Image 1 (cartoon, rainbow, N blue to C red):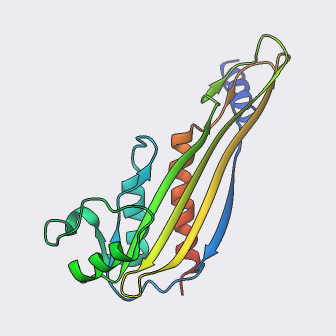
Image 2 (cartoon, rainbow, N blue to C red):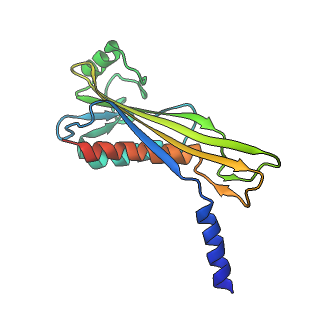
Image 3 (spheres, helix red, strand yellow):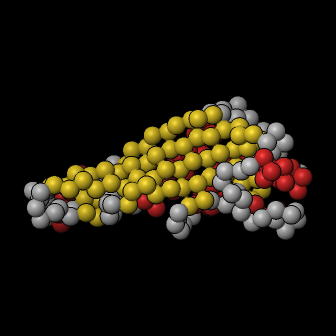
Length: 197
């Protein structure tokens, strides 16, 4: 009896989960050679505080670049650079980096929460049907500092969408924008690992 109840609850939870879909886009530089040079990892650009983004970026890029990856805060004490660089860098920004550091490449990343309409647990509305969406955009831009140009620009959109009607029974479980952000960032960096030269 107890096992049947547990199985029923697990079946309801699994069947009421909202799948998050991820769509990748490569604007430039799908495949890069990470085997040479020194790489700077900038701090994340976000429109809100999303925990663990830096940890994910450091862990995933370090698995690709190894000891040639330097976090921006490790460099700003030694060199005349800020603790966070702008996402869209000008030629002047890149020239300052070239002069101020002995690094070759810069990795910039940002997270934009496009839609935050779906709670992690969603109940049916009292009347009618409601569409709820959580949507996040993650972008990575990698610059060649010496050439002052973008080597790679990729993005991923993570979207959890749910149409809830009054006749739905029970609750639905969905990824929050924060969870989608972390999964999307990790997945996008893993694409670089899979496609590296």
